[in-house]
Image (cartoon, rainbow, N blue to C red):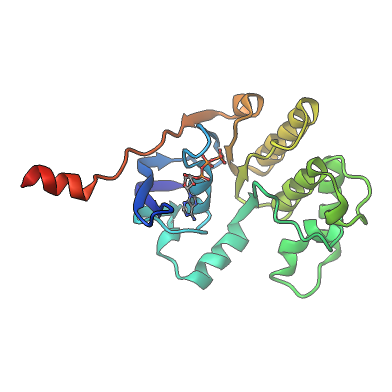
Amino acid sequence: MRLTGVTLDHRGGDGRPFRVLDLPKLVVAPGEHLGLRGPSGSGKTSILHLIAGLILPGSGTVAWGETEVSALDVSRRDRWRLNTLGYVFQDFHLIPELDVAANITLPASFSSWRIGRAEREHGEALARRMGLTDLSRKAGVLSRGEQQRVAIARALSRRPALILADEPTASLDAAHAEEVGTLLVEAAREAGATLICASHDSGLLARMERCIDIAPAPPLPDLATVSGHAA
Ligand SMILES: Nc1ncnc2c1ncn2[C@@H]1O[C@H](COP(=O)(O)OP(=O)(O)OP(=O)(O)O)[C@@H](O)[C@H]1O
């Protein structure tokens, strides 16, 4: 995974743009486990969204191997994401009306009208590994910690080559955070997947092979001030 010359700007409440990210270069080797560390609001989630192609950089490129993700049109990016990526969202994005098993196998249903037996059994095995015992419970009634486990199992369900995890242990107590963090790292290692975790959890970050600190981007030049100086 390679981000080159990436910038990302958003607009504040007053409509003025502000710089969220300014990343000259970020290279993650295939199979590497990378931690993104940084204060709240420094842009960790934004980096994961850029890598996933959920948002596009203002400038620069995001590439996975030979595929320049940031240059793909929407449908190709969707297909790339489906075939390559498992994403543990910060707020889980589970379907509350579906049970645990259906949530875990949900990504498979995007490419096939029927979930095969092998996919179902793989989903069940992942759920058991995550300590989820009752797969017929609706996601909407689960505790946040249980939902987090379902979200991780779902991200792993299609054996993705790239796993992005946004605060994957944030809803868990220390013992469960350690257990789930270990499972996530082990599953990624067994699959040879690249793992990128944004986290404040020092225990999880310590399990990564490398961590980088994400610092808030320097502010955009104030055009009014710049032209004032020039005058
Ligand atoms: N769609 C958006 N519109 C405007 N501002 C946004 C948008 N998305 C993110 N931001 C801003 O971009 C900055 C970076 O947000 P981001 O969620 O990437 O940070 P973070 O490091 O993941 O924070 P946390 O650790 O709290 O999850 C924040 O100031 C946030 O308010």
